[in-house]
Picture 1 (cartoon, rainbow, N blue to C red):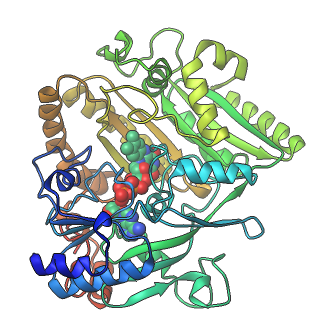
Picture 2: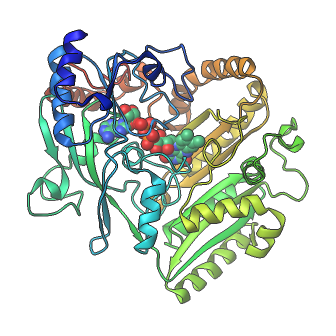
Length: 490
Ligand SMILES: Cc1cc2nc3c(=O)[nH]c(=O)nc-3n(C[C@H](O)[C@H](O)[C@H](O)COP(=O)(O)OP(=O)(O)OC[C@H]3O[C@@H](n4cnc5c(N)ncnc54)[C@H](O)[C@@H]3O)c2cc1C
């Protein structure tokens, strides 16, 4: 370890390298891995240039030491916790917005840039980026590398990534997409050869470190609107979302059950006190005066077109048995929910617990996150309510949103964990036991695929020849398996 530290010190100045136990302990836990459950790393380094990242991976490869990349550490699945120890490459100082290209509609960013920073700069330029409902302090590049779910999922193919620059332990620095040609710019994901950007998506830091990337940005248009429609059950809401996406009526739409909407009221009140209705045993039936669920959609563009789109969406919702909620009514009756949805879908900012509010209870929102085709997502909803009644404690709720062309839906059933720290820990362990087998059952019975990898060794093994090919590629770029081992992917 002494020699390793000496080698790292030849590249990194003292203030960007640490082996202080107190510092390292902070990297051994996240909101899914409580302190004491995972090994602490041996060192943390904070690179600022691609050359430094290259030297770091060369040294680590020589010493056969694991490297875990961390952008902002806000994932909620232990994916940047160095379970096998080694070095954490904390990328937060690689935080430059290198270019906002209004002509070709992309932004070139480093991994340490946050959503707050990118959204604010884009707004000045009249643009908007895809936002997950994650904390604004998380990284667009890291989020997009994990296939995001959020406010533009409907309006773009589920992938805002274009060209990337990636450093690998043995294949050196690779540029993908149009950037693989020196003079073609960063504007395109595809050119005339195979797509390599996609290889690094959903690889969770196991193939290399992405040091910069071009991401799609979207013109805000002359008019931006939030359109709220209410539904008494899930099936008509799915039909509504499917139709408005397939017919290009909205850039985005998400359905939230009433628990989420009450949760948004709590966020606004900055309260830690759970409203009693959120704890009632029957979680399926909303309290009086609150709709079962709200579909919130973003529409933007030319004023006349937006007006027409809104009229068609209202007609469609009513034909399906739903209703339209005027902005004034939403503002008056559900102010927290309205403010949250407006800020998120229209302004492009993230009011989130843990960052912008003081809610302590609710730091844990363990969820069952899946993607499935429209009819199966309806079956999965029924299955999850039944499971919850048997095994979960209130409150619990879900949200669902369609991806481009609405051929598949993202579905997140979330349990809000409250109580003392000991109670929280016991309940989280109980939930972990249930989730362990759940994903395999949902895949088998409903074709529901785990959204993001939850470290189930059996899962990657189920992919057959696809898995073999990916393992062979891994051998080319990282034969010593130093990149984020313990993810159980390789
Ligand atoms: C309250 C809350 C709600 C959330 N809701 C949503 C949601 O609605 N939709 C959604 O999509 N996400 C959601 N998330 C998840 C979260 O936004 C993403 O996981 C996150 O953006 C990625 O976190 P990060 O940017 O901090 O990256 P990290 O947590 O630092 O890293 C994530 C993974 O990517 C790898 N990685 C990071 N940077 C690089 C790099 N440069 N090169 C290679 N590998 C890298 C890491 O090793 C790790 O495996 C939520 C998170 C929270 C806390």
